[in-house]
Image (cartoon, rainbow, N blue to C red; front, side, top):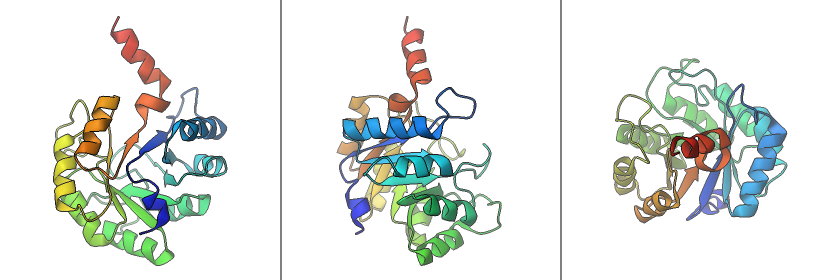
Length: 222
């Protein structure tokens, strides 16, 4: 197994992303956020956009999982082979992409996209929203599967916290490959349970790197 994947085992991957129009939306800011997370013990960083990938790769030593979001509907997480290759060229150690069977802008299937990336020697992480997505990812030869899209594709109800049920099912079906849990992990207790269920690693973003959301949680509790 590639050492960059082994480095994630049993640890916390921090997603450092800021949405368009937000105060923290700047590559240098995200690089500082990523470095702070690394100092805190993160074993990997997930980030979005070519500028952010390049800036963060130059600042941290842990593996960088790169994505490129285009739009906000349908397949928008690294939607085409072009997007995926650009992420790799920008410095991503692992490239994550939407693993659903929804139509892709370039007309390629998910399997065709993965096959091309594997020929390039790229490590591929599949962002899944269902057990069927995880099955598709495993069959295509992905290196990692993740529950990133659980609750966002219409196949499963969006849970308040992590989709523990999906994680457990995917680990049971594909325990021979790294399974990451991503999505709505907001507390250390939830993280602990995720790892108890057999996740290779967990990805936490909002609760660590999105102060606007965290602030709103506290304000709403007043």
